[in-house]
Length: 327
Ligand SMILES: *[C@@H]1O[C@H](CO)[C@@H](O)[C@H](O)[C@H]1NC(C)=O
Ligand SMILES: *[C@@H]1O[C@H](CO)[C@@H](O)[C@H](O)[C@H]1NC(C)=O
Ligand SMILES: *[C@@H]1O[C@H](CO)[C@@H](O)[C@H](O)[C@H]1NC(C)=O
Image (cartoon, rainbow, N blue to C red; front, side):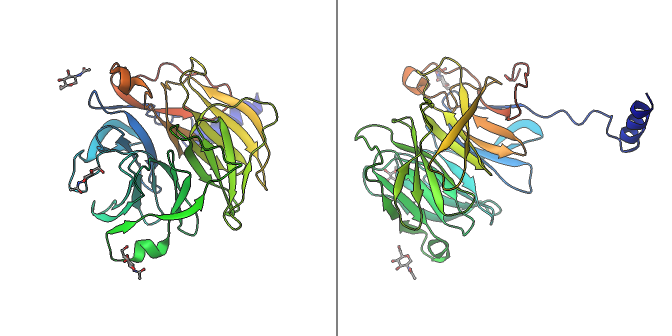
């Protein structure tokens, strides 16, 4: 009893009993052809960004408010006609992969100006990217067996338009299948010595050592994992958004414990529900994930569930929430 009174007093004194501002849990995107694929959170700000795979529109959302604004309209002066994976760098530049356009756009968030535009070889489908602590940006290609890099030197170069540099060829044991979606999500490991690349088509994750460029298939024992689309890593925890709508009727994110040297991992659990709808990728917002409900496959059938949404997904175990769909 006394403990409880003291606890109450403590929390009252610090204003902690007053319910914290309820979190915004879902954001509706305007448009019936939006298909948001990538998402990036800007540090030290309330903002996140997402973009349309179909039109190239880039939106800016605020983690505290449900409204989302057009940041760069589709068919814009930068010629972003399709947007896939994206990240915000330490310098507050938004880096956007341009899917089948084979372009990567680097946009200054403050001035909204295009700083650079990189072009991959013909036949590329640039899917996702990850930023290392030293400023290198690694970009995956779902169609060509290559991993690309944008270095700080590229970003210092005054030329806006540059060719995208190949960092490594993805040869066996990487399981590249021509005509299929291969490399997808990517993360840089904590030690900054490796990248982990999700192979969407093979339901596998590969480690590429940045120093030796050797490739190793990560061994998860006999556990069947989802089809890795967007991936995120914090410490030893790897999150892989399942992008395969045929695998399971309910959307899920695979959670793995994976430690140095990152060649083996343990499948820990699956995060499900919470408003996810055929999602593609995610960004950290504190301990939550902001998940882009891409509605993969629905572009072909032209019957997406409207409105398109971004949803907040808790990474905490077995926490149930109500419907995330905005009214
Ligand atoms: C989407 O919106 C456009 C313009 O408002 C309209 O012409 C079109 O029929 C809509 N398509 C669907 C599938 O609702
Ligand atoms: C705009 O991008 C598209 C798709 O990559 C390309 O085909 C077209 O040539 C570009 N237009 C200009 C003016 O650069
Ligand atoms: C800057 O980029 C241009 C265009 O890709 C290239 O021709 C030039 O060599 C680069 N300059 C330096 C210093 O790397």
